[in-house]
Length: 246
Image (cartoon, rainbow, N blue to C red; front, side):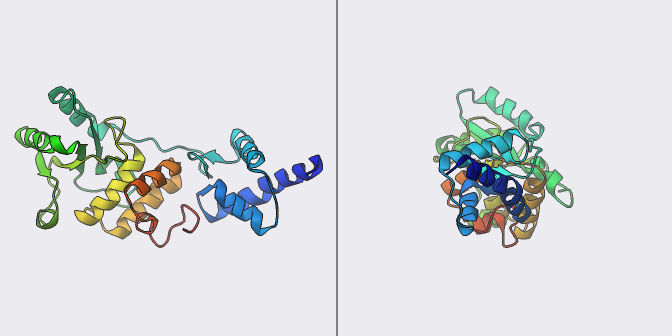
């Protein structure tokens, strides 16, 4: 390919491809770009394509959303740690050697059309430690639930200082006590269904509001969803406009 052709291809990517893909969804992958090129019978070596998109990212024409993913959103999402900080410090003091992670529905309340009147915190721990953590929380004034399933899940209700203790995922354990946003979203998708915290429509609307206005690490979200065997249809819903059709 000549220098002139390379220049033209780069121009096509910058002017046509970024505009076309960005108008269809808030996030897209380098694989989506390759499909776009193939449909126009255009060729671009992977290394060259990656170099071009690194240049586009540095120029602020597109924004990195994790390995192989890009976004039209310039502002990254910042997770509010405050709703779980107090509990984390409490658990660290009581169980200094315990690996665990926490997240709360309060951390995503800003993406809801209406504010949730009450919030629930989730603590993910090693299975062997679940009962000890639950017992401690119950004894210290929390409305604590130990891995509610089935009939107990049907009785679940969010009250004051409600906390649910679950097992940590062995395939995708959190590296810090504050669960990252990708884990929060995937686990909330399950909990919304199992504990009826919110309807599927409310969850999908929240996700669209949150990830559609602030950039999240989409590559990590999809990776975590895959490790938890969560279908993308269930995660994003039928009216998905965040990523290309799946």
